[in-house]
Image (cartoon, rainbow, N blue to C red; front, side):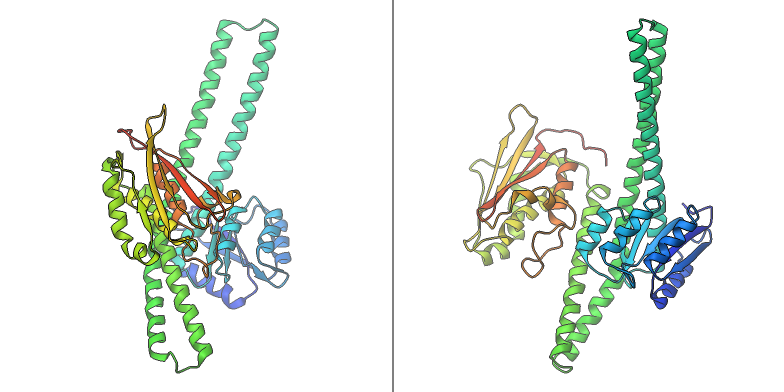
Length: 430
C-alpha cells in the first residue's frame, strides 16, 4: 500500500558516498511508483543523530543506521540509539556482513538488518515501507492491548465492589457481560490484524530472498571465472582473498535458499494427505547415501514399519532429512549411529517420534536456542551450515500441529523428539 503522506528518513551515516548512493537508490526505486515523496536528512555521528531526533521528535518516520560511526562502533551503536529512540522504527544499514550481529540487533528491536551493496533500490524501499508499517501495527496493537487490559481491570474492580455491596442486579450483570464480550471481540480483531501482518512479513521475506538470487548468481559466476582464470597468477594473497570471496558467495547462496525454504513452510505448503513415514525415511536415506557412506553411519529403524500420518510429504522429508543429516554431520570420533523410533503417545491423538544419535551432543542450556533462526553453536570452520535447519524443523512440526524438543548430553549424543497427529486432524491455519 503506498504512503499517502511524505516519508521523512533520518540517515545516520558518516560516509558521504554511501549516503549519496542510498539517496540515489531510493529515488530510482520502481517497486511502488505511487509512493509519496521521500525526504532524507543526514547526520554523520551517533551523537548528531540522537540530537537531531530529539530536537525534531515526531518529525521522522524511520531511522537508517550505520553501525560503524566515528563516535560509536558495532552493536553498542544500535543499543545507544534504541535507549533514546525506542518509539521509531530503526533499520540497520551497514557494511558489517555478520549473521550473529544481525540476529542480535533484530532481537534487540531493529526492524531489519541490511548489508550495504547487497540490495537495490526496490528492496531497500520495501524494507523501509514494511518496517514503518510493522512498527505502526505493533504500537497500535500494544496500545489497544493496554487499553483493553485497563478497561477489563477497571470493570472487574467495579464489579467486585458492586458484588460486595449487594448492588448488582441481573440487568447490570448482563450489561457487564456484554461489555466484556465487546472487549473480547475487539481483542480478537486486533489478534487477526497481527496474524495478517505476520503473513505479509513472511511474503516479504520470500520476495526479498527471491529477488536476491539473480544478482547473487551473477556475483558467484563472476567470482568463479576470476578464480579459474587468475588463480596462481596474482600471488598467494590474491588467491586467498578470491577464495574467501567465492566461499562467502556460496554461503550467501545457501543462506538465501534456506531462508526461502523457511518462508515457504506456511506460504507454499501443500494440503495435508495421508503420508507413510516408512517411505519418507527410506527416501531420506537415499538422499543422504553419500554422506552415510563417507561417515560410515548406521541408520536403524524400528522392526515394525513407521506409521501413516496426515501431512505434507515434502515437508516431512525435509524434517527427517535435517534431523538425520545433523546426526551424521555432528558426529564424534565414533562412526555415527542413528536410531529412529516411534510410539503412540499415551492418552494423546498423536505419535511421538525420536531421532537418537551418538554424536558430540550439546549443553542443555542451548536446548531452546538451537531451534531459533540463524542460531549456531559452532563456527563455519568447525561445521558447515546456515543455522536455519532446526528452525525449519520446528516450523514444519508446528504446522503439522505438533511440538519438537531435544534432550542431549555433551559428548554423549542427542535425541530429538517431535509429535505428529496420527489421524486426519485438519491442517492448522497458516
